[in-house]
Structures are given as C-alpha cells and as structure tokens.
Image (cartoon, rainbow, N blue to C red; front, side):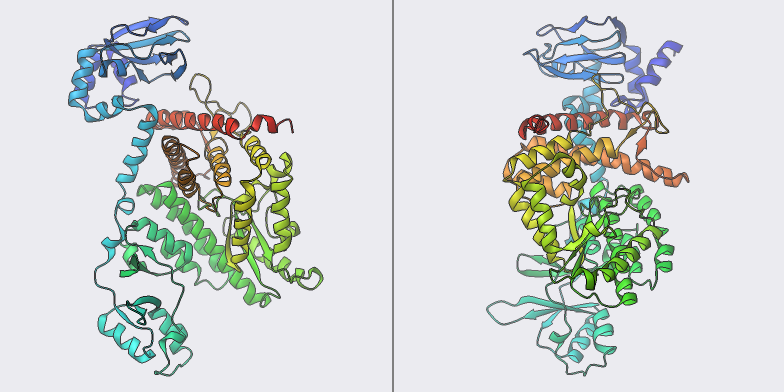
Length: 624
C-alpha cells in the first residue's frame, strides 16, 4: 500500500465506525476514496442534489443545515456526513457548507452500500443520529455487565423458609438449623393471607438472644426486626447491591406484590459482585477506632478500580462509593458517641452533595451538616455536638475524605442548628432568593439523613418539595447560577481547554461536565416537586410530570452516564498508574471513541442549558 494510502488508513482507523472495522473492509474503503479540498464558505452539498458520496472530514469543519436553513450540526475531524441521503432516496436531505478550509475523503455510494450490508457496526453507526449513537455507546456498556442485566430472582435458589411470628426462640433456631438457612422470615398469619411481619438472622440470634441469655421460650417477636427493607422481584441484582449498601443490611426479602418469593443474602450478591464493596462496608462496622478505619480506607480505591474494570455503570459506582462514605461516617458517629457519651438531645447527621446524590467518586471532600432537635439549648448542648462533629470530620480526613474548602461541614456552627432554624434557612433561600446566597447554598438542595433522627432530613425534603415549585423567582435564580458552568465545547465542536495554570490544555470533567448536568437536572426536579436526590432518579421523576420530552430525558441520561464513565475511567487509570486521580483530562489522552461521544454528550448539555434559560427565564433573573 502506498504511503499516502497508509496515512489515510491510519487516520480513519482512529475514529468510529472505522476503528472497529475489519482490516480487509477498511483496506477496501481506503482504496476507493477520492480526496477533495473545500475552501471556507464553499458549499459541499446542496438540498435535493443527487447523493452519491459519504464524506469523511480529515481536517477542517463543516456545517450541516436542515432544509429550513436552520443549523443542524457542526462536523469536525474524524466525523462523517452525507449518510442520510444515501440511506433514504439518494437525494441530499441536509445541505452542507465548509466553514473553514477543509480536507474531505469521499467514499463512493457502492462502497457505502457494501459496508452497510456487510458490517453491522457500520450499519448501526450510519443509521442513527449523534445522540442515538451516544445512547448506543451507553447501552453497549450496560449489556456487558451481568449485574445490570440479571434480575434478583436469579439469586433465589429455594422457596422462602418461614414461620409464624408467634413461635418461640428455640423453635425458630430449630427451623433455621433444619433448613440450613441464615435468615428466617416471620409471618403474621392473622387474616385471609399470611403477611410478612419480620425477619430473624443468625446474627440476631447471637447478639440479641445468646449474648443476653434469653430463655428458649422467649417469643421471637421480641427480637425480630420489623419495618423490613425489601426488594421487588422485577428489580436487578445491581439494585439489590445498592439497597444493601445504602441500608447496611445483609438479607433482602424478595417480594412479588404482597407475596414473598425468597430471600437473597450478602453472600449471594458477592458471587456476582467481586469488587467487594459490600465486604468493605461490613468491615467498616467491625473497626473499633479511627486507626482501624484509616487502615481499611486504603481498600476504597482498590474497590473503585475493580468496579471500573468490571464495567459497572456510573450509578452503581457512584452509589457504592457513597455507601462506603456513609458507612465511614456512621461508624465514626458510633465511635464518637461511645467516646463522648450519648447525645444530650436527638440529632440527625446529614450528608450533602455527591454523597447525598449517590454520585460520589474517589476524588471527593466531605460536605455534611447536623440537624438538632428543637429542644437544643446552645449553652448546655452545643459543646457536645461541636466535639462530636470535629471527631467525625477529623476521622473522615484520616480516611481520605478531605476537609471542605468552603467549610460546608458540621464543624461550622452555622451548619449545626436545630430543625426549626434549618426550616428557616430553606424557607428564606426559596422565598427570598439572592443569587450569591443560592450559589453558596446550592449544595444543600442535595441532602440525605444518614444517622440519628433521619426523619428531620425527610421534613426538610418535604418542605423543599412543597415550596420550591411555587417560587419562579427561586427557580430562575437557581437556573442563572447553573448557567455559570458550561460544557467545554466550542463553536466548531472542538474542546475548549484551560489556557493557563497547572491544568492548562485540559478540561475538567466534573466542573464542565457532570456538575452542569446535575445542576440543571436538580432544577427541573425541584420544579416537579420531586423528593429524589440521585440525578437518574430525578430524571425518572421529571419524566412522570412530562416537563421534558422522553427523547430529551433519554439524551440527558445518556450524556450523564457517558461523561461520568469517562471521568471514572480517567480516575481509575490514574490510580493504576500510581498517580493521584483528578478530574482534569487532556483530549490526547482520550480514545477517538471517547472524544467523539464526549462531543455528542457535551452538545446535549449545551442544548439542555439553552432550554433551562428559556424555561425558567434565567436571563431575566440576572437583572433582578
């Protein structure tokens, strides 16, 4: 092959769909290419003309227009256009114009037709739009992961072992021994149909019965666990894993409406979940001091990397990391109460930001607060909570969760207040919104009670859901602030990079990618009265209200997933290479596949921000 053709081949092999094309097909394409040059401002395709070529951009940029003259897309290096006319009626459907001096490779129709008939990946690529390609890229990752595609019923190996909730302790132990199970479901048999009432596990027998020397005739109802965490039979294994992580439970009854299908245990999920985040959480609660917690915190990054290498999706990874972070926090609070004594008044420890959203990764700081009971008296009680908050914050820092540079921590007295004060905070933020105040308090609209009287946090979620949707000025101010962070994509679909400082020639996937997405999703969710915190769950809630079209919701889901996964893989690769992980990416370190689909994803963010400005009149908010 001539040197010129080798150069063409090597360039095309970097970009989809040619990057996955069999060598013999790619050689055929290269051998039949015609090279053309288009000056800036010249027309490449005119509406209605015969469509005979697929165009590949070697260098330069091309604008694609709708038949109305409206701009449809901008095409840059490594991208193709002209396929729609070839697929439909051999007429140009989308006219094109070079917007800078552009070098093009023209692939003849007959070659295009041959590729379409003989290469499924090529056919899929040219048959669907950019955002559909993004969706295809996301779904391909999900299909490769068994946790994502297997239902929890796959883990059920036997009929559930049950007993009436009126049985005695010795009888319950006998039933569990004879059936070889570690958990016994206890049923309320009053009424027409038995109803699940509670559960008893081997651990319960050890810690609640044997250690307390209870009599064998003790009613099992005295030690069983009620208000059970359950999972529906149509849910996936990864959802069971997240439920166990979030609630620190080792057994989940599987329900089909009101009927118990079976019980899945921690050991069942570990069969599929080799990254061992569940075991890590279990080990956290066995540690007796901060030194022990610090030691096992070294396993967090290993767990993260294993999940990435096993193709877990961003929701699984973010939820697992948040579950691990919650567990460190909860154990530190338990250790703190053992050290300083029981709290003088009830309180709730509240997670904020990415932990509350179940979107935490390994590069994170601590964002938290305390809600105190309204019986709190500062002079009598605050010293206890100040000392406890410092113990927890220092412990989290020892375990790798750095102090918040903005001082959004329970160690700050402003964020350690009674419930009534917190309600006042949120009411003022919503009813009397000020741009700067909301910019600093934005993180509080992602909240989750993780320890103590978690009902306090639920009351705040209810207040926000009721008030936020009725304050257009508040939503406009939030939208205005959300528009301050824009995706790193320029007018010609090129990446916009940092120009100075140690991060020059990079773009930040959190600040310019996932953060703008979570910001705009949050605003739509607040407008819809949703109490959800996770961005994917918020999108589901938004879909139920029809505020956004299903296609737009799908685009946002796919963009969030793809940007998150690129960010996650960037951090995992840094850890494996012995570098400190961060969020700053150089375009040249990305694969052509990642570069191409990141551009699609950032364009989704860009379009979504335009709608945000229109929907909430954010431009007017700038002048308020």
